[in-house]
Image 1: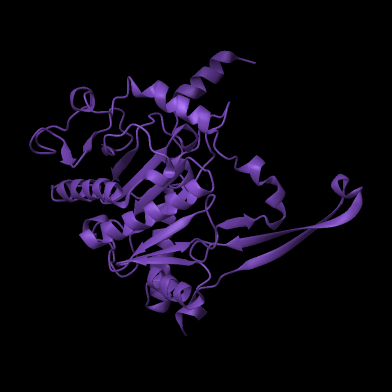
Image 2: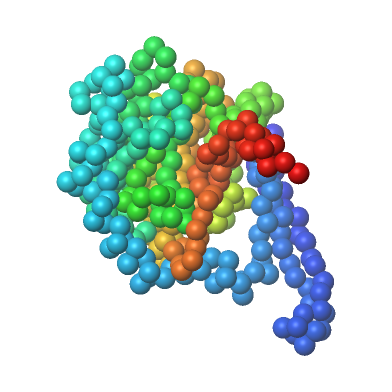
Length: 354
């Protein structure tokens, strides 16, 4: 059995009939396609009938509004030069030696002031407060990703290092960011969050059934088919996802690397090059926001079952009166965040009576 035989690209054609006012109430057929992710079976609908609604579903950026937002938020930005060194927190010396931060070029890593996991770092990405999507150079992205990999490596050498890591990003408020300045986030947790856990389980089952790595097979098949292959940047292969988890999803699969600690400088460069390319394309579509996640198997997991990979999606653009509460935890990792505990919420509802 070949890799092509092992990986099903399942797509179901769907036709809906209606009498449309756009056609004088004549009967028309509307066509969509239901696709399934080859690893998890997660569904995605490709709306071939939605080309006329593109501007409604994914608006082009309001450039004047975005420029005003960038200008208004620059003065008090915590991540800009002159403030980032004085107002951001530091790790304790027993966690990170030196001054409790890591630096590379114009980028700085420090702990999140409001951590969601035991290890939750932020990387202020460069000194520039705002960047259009076509102005994220590969060098800057490699600088930030390299800091993330270095931080994970530092923590992983400790005696109580969490097994699971993700490098993530929200950009601009519609992508879930509370700060305009470009930044990455690094999360370390003892257990994989929802989406990585499901994918790890399915990847291990795939290896047990076929004696092969799903991600290696996927790359081989996509290379052969050529329909969704985008680029090979060193050891990183970039694809358009068959069944996207978000608008314009791109995948960057790292050959031979199962966990972020096994990423080499060539992997980092390949990830950065593909991300820069993808963001340029998003910019050409006049989009302005994105989510990113890079993750792999837990430390000590079967290195032949999983590969580190990046998922990049565009989000709603900056337009007037838009606010998003869906960002990388929900969108990419399948995990919700709440402010109040369920127990507290139950108490509030009970007190409200009936």
